[in-house]
Length: 418
Image (cartoon, rainbow, N blue to C red; front, side, top):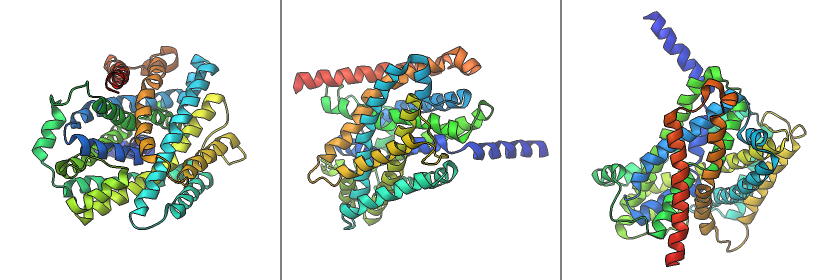
């Protein structure tokens, strides 16, 4: 009995030692753009898109686990490996695409920060510069360990959306049935439906996540010996993120969709619309969750981009390095924050369209990143006995094929009906 307790205790200590990268990465993707996308999905389509959450969650677990395993085994970031295996030219173009995509995402995060506090009468001209300064100082003045602790605390605040979903008093039977049954009423020939499905995948499994997760595993110093504990960190983080996303869709389906409120300008608009339908507490929780998620993601997205670009192009990177030790890393991080926050101060900028577009662009770009990831992780010289199993390869390649097919289908329906 003592040996059994000691075994469990040692496993728990090991898990707590490596927890962070997987849980943080999965949950930060429920950001301003993600919350808005889930809200729109619930408002426009009711419960009918809940069926996507099971296959998306399976794909999320597999994709995140691959990235974390590759980081632990090789001790290198994803863009670093892509450069070594496929050359600098391919890496350069991939980095350019990632930077463009992530600039859109960073804009969406600061929009979420601004809109969440504008609900309480605080001007974006005060909120956005203050948030940008906080985010910049947090990372530039902190270390990996201190920053990670703050991010883990921020991840816990996502429980606000679960409570908001409960307060919305949804039809649990209808929601459960829609989760396990693909509805026949909405066909894949509908452009808006395909657009939203791609957005849901893109916001849940964003390309930047793979770069950030693998880089953070390397910087944390997790090795193949700690792989099993790291795997649980990834799985639990993905499941929690998926549950939060499910509750956001359900909350908006039960309230907004049921009264015909299908047009939502941004995530704050969804929170405001919930106020008369689900009550003051649901509204406050939704707004508080939006502020937390937006500030959280506004910190991590620029970090992930800086990691990916600097690794891919051979520059020094890392939160444990000082500004003068990794100038390219910190200057790129700074530039992304200034750009993302600065755009918010431009009058009449079409931010609502940018927010959902950024998630769809994530979905369109995902297959390209996954192709590199799957090829790398099946390289036995690189991964040894840690190459993918057949089941993992089936899920990964199926995700690639489905996302390419959905993208082609979306463009085809737009051409036909546009």
